[in-house]
Length: 245
Image (cartoon, rainbow, N blue to C red):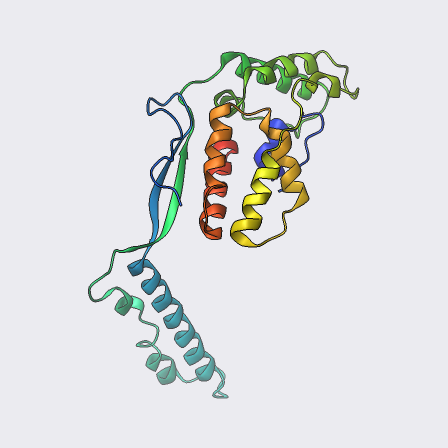
């Protein structure tokens, strides 16, 4: 999780870790808010072809293993040639294909609007961190300007004025933890029957007050998914859009 939040590594107390249709009411359609859309991630055809390819690989490997155990230095050339038909995956693409969707995919688009104050404050933090020798704190300031609220800019400007190595937690007093982690964990428990990772809960709680309302609303749509796989894929897609791959 830390790799997705390198541009947020200056967060004073950040804990690092870990059925709806259409856009589910996220965004207003003009690009000013984060939007969610759905795509078909896997069709019946995709699933059947994948299974066929796995079967071909297994048959091919097994045939080569048998040929390699013939006891000759170079094996038996004719034996290996006989494996060619078992190693031919072209048959996996023969015949009609059923394009019925069996797995949903999720796509989140960043808000088109950005906050120059957040971007500029982020750049000043980067410069300050470099001067302090914190060269591992590289931040994606452009992405930050699309997903963070303006209060973060004020916190960062405060942080810039703190001497290197000194405690800057007071700068983030106006960005207290929220309850997004509790919502996410309750949804995970309900859909997946899994106990929530406390680091993931803490991370979500911490970042809630940093993110724009529309970005938080976007991930909340994931927590309304009833199927475990849908919830997990949706949340992962939101993370990738918000924090980068």
